[in-house]
Length: 340
Ligand SMILES: [Zn+2]
Ligand SMILES: [Zn+2]
Image (cartoon, rainbow, N blue to C red; front, side, top):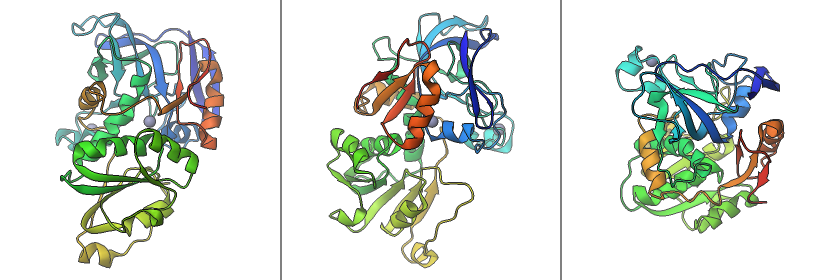
């Protein structure tokens, strides 16, 4: 079978290799769709902490079960699943205290040491497989993994009724956070992106308050400000716009070596809370529930899909910032454009 492999930092190849072995508690999955995100770029460029090459990328996957390990009774061939890519040691201080996403041996399929889904078949532990309803569109449902990250983000926010939300970034994560905000009690949601092209997606999702600069918005301060860009200028701008008593969240992944300026006096005087959020913690199952309940509208969010042959094209396109959510569809016969 065919697989995309990151052979070493900055080098990829499409190779033929045997199907993966299935352990007693493993599930063999024929992937339908695999979302691409900034993490894939970091893994390819050798900037992700702990990556061990060679590695098959792909951590935002859905697919059809084709075989299950000898000890598995809860899934069977033909079932549709979404896959939580995170595995943790279960033994460290953080795992033992219910903070598995902070595990010092945190591993993600397609990210650290275990192969991901950009191959014709891949293997995931049973505990990471979440069954979908048969009628759920398996391709669009690859958005469940980023949705699970968003729900973790909300777990760390105050979620009070009637608050005003300001979100930086009109990419997948910003748009997820924006669509969830009303469900967390938001009275209004404002989305900022310096790229007006990207704001079109926000508008298509019904987010009317979308601007290239927060200076253009009708408010000066917001109760909750979420950065989904990782961009230092956006973070510095956003921190200054948190209302007294409000919360700022670093959701986007900023470059590890960069620092942002903020006023410690203001954080003190106005009791501003600054919080991070990292990947998924007990939120994958809830993401499936929310997705199947229609909490997000996937249609305007996914713009292109690519075959395994075109993986490098997808990576290049991602870097240019063109398109919306890009997917790899490892078993599709052609690359497709949904929103041009
Ligand atoms: Zn991702
Ligand atoms: Zn651990």
